[in-house]
Length: 302
Image (cartoon, rainbow, N blue to C red; front, side):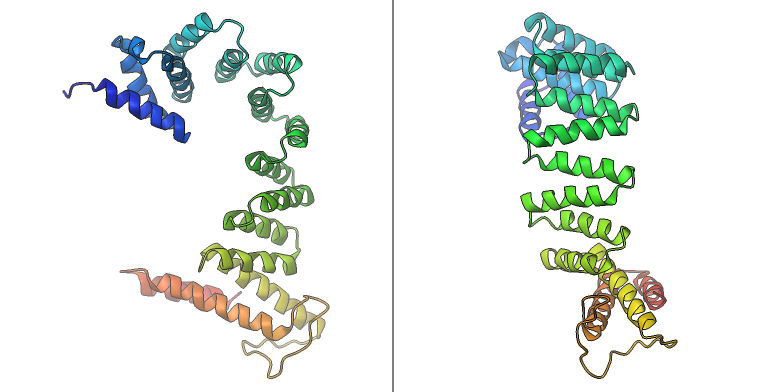
């Protein structure tokens, strides 16, 4: 058995705290060894951050005895601390005592309404209880104060989507994009919400933006393919034509009042998306040819 390296273990835990990575199994393994082998007193004041870190990881892994040990150490050192009270609430959440945890968080917020951690834990507890409207209300109130919290906007969007409130979810993603306009994944989420709510023309613009920010991003290309096909079908229906053609028109038409695009542009985007999707799958080895054929056939029936 290899000898335990305290310096390396403590440095690893410190690095994980700095990066915010939540590698619970690793944290519990290292932290429990440090505690049980009596190395904790070597950490100085840093030991309290380590206890908090190990406590949260232990809750993730349902290592209740280790979590209790860490929490008792923190309660003894910081009696009545709001931060420790939040950890107590997390323990209650892990035990399924959600109502008691919510009351605890409410008490913390009565003393300090700006306590971000208590607000977020209360929202998480409301979600766990299935109290979606209460979670939405709490998160909306939180964002009135902390507008720049991108993760909170994404969480609120997800809550609205769960309730099929697409207009509100769309608004949340618009705020996210204002905060981080160069993140293609946020544009993708926004485009998918637009497509789901049947705003196809605007969804197409956003899917194009996704591909602009991240070359040949497949979900973006699939979005372009689906949107252009939908818009072309609308054009065909509006012209009362019973025939469909894979060939673009011979002349460039004016911008359509139905789609907001000229038909030639739609054909070009559709063909380009198809070509780039097939190109992406053609790089596959072994069964790549079969996969390419399958994807090509699927694209043709859209």
